[in-house]
Length: 179
Image (cartoon, rainbow, N blue to C red):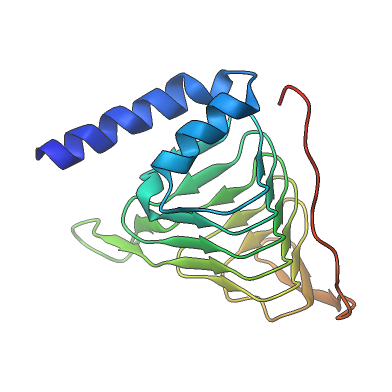
């Protein structure tokens, strides 16, 4: 194990095992500014979020990440645009296993979530997915293929159920208290 890997493992343990449970936005955000690959302005990252190799995770400006989310940046990047809302206990994966591999080999890819997308409660985004600008992923959906801009998807696997208004102008400004 290299010194860099050991340091990363230690930082991951510190954040995921201790810091994420501290009811102080200032402490959590200070740690994440140093820990993430990119950390935008005016973010709200609530308690109990976990990051696997946070050096591969980028968060844009004005994002809201609700409690209990998991960001799996173990091998590939997660790039999140501006004004993205991620609901409680959502999971974003970049790595899994090839079910057809006789050696149970890894399979994965980077995840890109574009501006003003909304990932709802307990949604799961699988490796290698792009979620387009303004798209909505409904609660509990399992995203197995790319989501087109301004589409609304739901279900397992997620399928298109509608279109979102394209005239989005908001900037997320939510700031939770003690979360």
